[in-house]
Length: 480
Image (cartoon, rainbow, N blue to C red; front, side):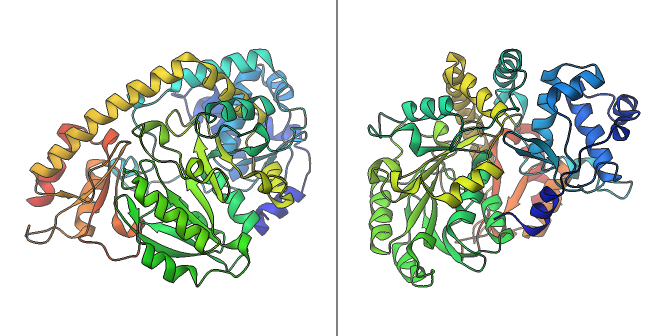
C-alpha cells in the first residue's frame, strides 16, 4: 500500500555500520550550534542521509544503543528519532526499530529565497504562546524515564490499548457504546487520512471532498494517485445538489465511495457545520452509500454546540478523525480514528496501521498529555487567545476594506479578500509576493479549491498576524 519508492527502501534492511557515526558529535555542533542536543542530532543524521553515508533501508541503532555510543540520554535519542520520523527521514516498524526511509533534499544554498520568504511558510507552527510545548516536553520526560525501551516490543491491534481506552472514554458522552476496539491511533490527521485512503480506495479512484478544504489533504489525495470531486460548501452546509451530481462519478464498490468533510472549525474557513447541514450531509451519505470521513482535528477549538457527524450517525457509516497534537505542539504527531465496529477488522487497515501508525513512544506521550489536568486548562487559554487574535485580525482586515468569506466560529483560520467594487484591487500574485516579503503566512483560494468563489480571497492564520505586521502589509499592498 506504500508508494513503490518507500516500499523498496523499507525492503532493504542493511544494519547501520559504525562509520556513519564517525565525527557525528563534532558535525552536530558545527552544523547547528544554536540548537538543543536532540535537534542537533536530527541535523547530524539528516546530513548523513543526504551525503549517502546512511542509505535508504538502513536499520538504525536502537534508542539505548545509540545513546550509549554517543554518551547521551535515551530521552534525547527518542526525541530525535520521533522528529526524524515526523520529517519522513526515518520510518518505524513495531517490534523491529527504525529504518532510513529516503534521502531528503539538501539544505538550501546561497540561491535560496530571502529569510523573510523562508519564514512565510503558511503551515509552520504557531508562535510559542499558542503552543503547549512544555506540556508535551514534560510528558516526554515522564515517558522516557518510565519506559526507556519503549520501541522494542510489538504493539497490539490498532494502537496502544491504554491510549485507545482513554480516547474512547473521552467520547462516551456522545457515543455511549464506543469501545476501545473501535479506536485506531494514527501519525497525525494526515497519517490517518492516508491509511483510510489506501485501505479503501485504489489509484485512479476519485473521492468526494468539500470545497474549500485543507490544502495538505488535497495534496495528499493527489499524491496517492486519487482524484477529487469537489462539493461546494456554503458556510455551515454542503451543496447537496452538487453532491448528488458528483456521487454518480464515484466507483461502484461501496467501500471505495468516500466523502471527506469537516464539521468543527474547518480549515480554511474556520466555521462549523450547522445541525441542519450535518443532517443533510448524513442523509446524502445514506442515499449514495458513502463512507464519510469526518475530519475533526480542531474540535477542541470549536463551540460546544458544534455538531458531530459520528455522534449523529452513531458510528454507522462515519469514521471520525480527531487529533491530540494539532492544538499542542509540532513535537507530537498523534491522531485517532473512531471506526464503526464492522470496519475494525479490515485487514488492509490493520496492515497499513502497522506500517504507517505512530510510534509507541508518541502513543505513551499522548496518554500522559490526556491524563494531565493542564491539558484542559491549556485548551481554555488557547481558545481565549485565538478569540482575541481572531477578532483583532478581522477588525484590521475590515478596516483595510477586505471582506471575510465567512465569520469564523473559532480556531486559527480566517479567509478574506477585496470584493468587487473595492477597486483598485491588488492581484493575487501581488498579495502573495508582498506577504512573503513581510513574513506573513498567507495562501490563496486556489490552494484550497477549484470551484468558483464569490471573490478572490486569502487564508490568514490569526496566530501569525500581529497588529503591526498586518497593518504594514495591508498598507503596502494597497499603496505599493
